[in-house]
Image 1 (cartoon, rainbow, N blue to C red):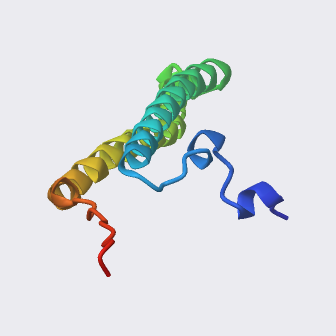
Image 2 (image 1 turned 180 degrees about the horizontal axis):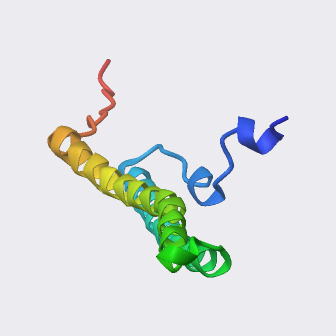
Amino acid sequence: MPDSSTTKGTRIPELAAIELRSTTALKRYTEESRRLAKDFAQELEMAALEIEAILAATGEGNPILFGYDNKLRARRVASRATRAADLQRGVAVEMTRMWHDFLLAYAPLLQNHKTPTKTFDFDT
């Protein structure tokens, strides 16, 4: 059963603390998302290397193949974590592209946006 933090969208406090109400907040959100994705990718890459090393060292392979088959199995298992790391790097790239697309689509509108000056007419 999910706890209340998963249903409210606060599983990642660094991102949940940013309220998306301004351009600077959106920029902070994309930068923080990108940083978290890159950190997670690095963690997964390190885990993949550790998994492969541990599985290759502890398993028993075919004596005729000198354990080469065990190394292949370990590499295949670790390749899933490596792929997950690559996908997290893709998340970082997509967040950068999102910010770039935002600038292309909305920056001209934001630059031309002028707040109307309110004047008070004392004569009427």
